Amino acid sequence: MESNRINLKEKIGYGLGDAASSMYWKLFSMYLMFFYTDIFGIEAKAVGTMFLITRVWDSLFDPVVGVFADRIHTRWGKFRPFILYMAIPFGVMGVLTFYTPSFGHTGKMVYAYLTYSIMMMVYSAINVPYASLLGVMSSSPKVRNVLATYRMTFAYLGSFVTLLLFSPLVHYFSGGSQTLTNQQQGWTWAALVIAICSVILFLLCFSWTRERVTPTQEQRSTLKEDIRDLWHNGPWWILLGASIMTLLFNSVRDGAALYYFKYYVQEEMFGNIYLFRIPFVLSGLYLAVGQIANIIGVIAAAPLSNKIGKKATFVLAMGVATLGSVAFFGLESQDLWGIFGLQVVISICAGTVFPLLWSMYADCGDYSTYVTGNRATGLIFSSSSMSQKLGWALGTALTGWLLGYFGFQANTLQSTETLKGIRMFLSLFPAIAAALSVAFISFYPLNEKKMLQISDELQKGE
Image 1 (cartoon, rainbow, N blue to C red):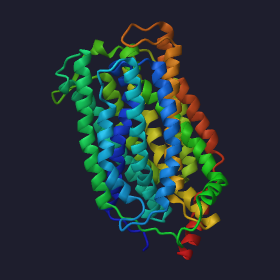
Image 2: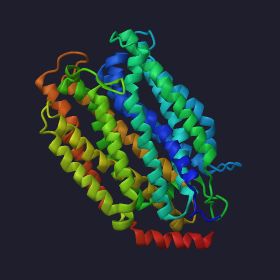
Image 3: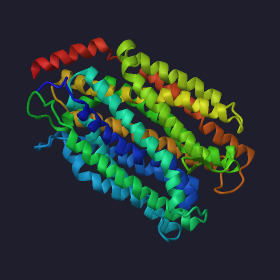
Image 4: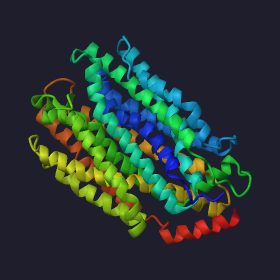
């Protein structure tokens, strides 16, 4: 069944899956470090180490999910059943992650390690198959670009809603109180609202999508052969390096944003900003503006990449992001127009890149099938999830360790050296990662002409 005709409902359905996933992923990337240090009560260095250990382990778990999904057959396909059965566990574990138990320091560390590790494994069990679904909804590279655009557009819409409303939700459920106990309660109930939304969106994604692309023959390759094929997939290695650097770029910027506004900008001096009688703080508006800019970048990705190519679009976007990040370091705390302006520019660039990465992983999967004769879509896409988590692991671990190195202490007045370090998290450190991503992608060999040739050959064999 040819897959070049996918209706609007199915495109939206596919996008809703990443809206669900991103609602929590943004909480993890932008709020969880802050939650653990300032609400939960763990030292920054300990949080950084926890993130590294749990996410590296979880990254290794992703290929296990991908290999397993490649080898199952159900009436719903290979990947959609995971979305159906893991939606509710995903929501439940998200709430437990943002719950603060009445334990001592050791008990809290054990609880944090346990809940966050399980949360990330559940995330793998639903997100790896969801990502792999892109490779079997259509065999057309251009259709995949469109699907990736829908995916990332809805991902940023979900993130925008979460980042815009999460602080007001915490404010509402904590009764507007800044006492630690009330804040802890507010965070848990706010996470519950996000969980309910995520579960509903995942179930709609399952219901509205279909799997069309099937292997040219029954899967006969062994796990050892699949791993060997992946090991020799040169474009995959290049894309893996570029992906890790891109996620490192994002994770460092995102993870430090709340610290930047609380301790450097000192947003409490500006008080709450009311829109439609809903109280917002500067950091929440900054993050929400970034999501709107991300959406602009996502919308621009498909037409721009279809015109000049995915590789050239990637280089252009991350090149501008590098320069914008360097310029961010020169901003003073009162330069709000500059802070928000550069946030828009950098976020547009980041939004442009991510749909390209997902589409390029699908191309790497087709390249592997073309060369080896075996389709290992789940394994290929699990590597994209693995790179995502490795990038976040490195980024959040570095953020925690460097916060400790620069002398950060939660809920106190920070030194000049600490404030300088916090500024570097949103500027010079991301700039280095962005430049390295450009260096990696410059070696990527799968251009549009090559992928059209591969797609034609694979369709002849179906």
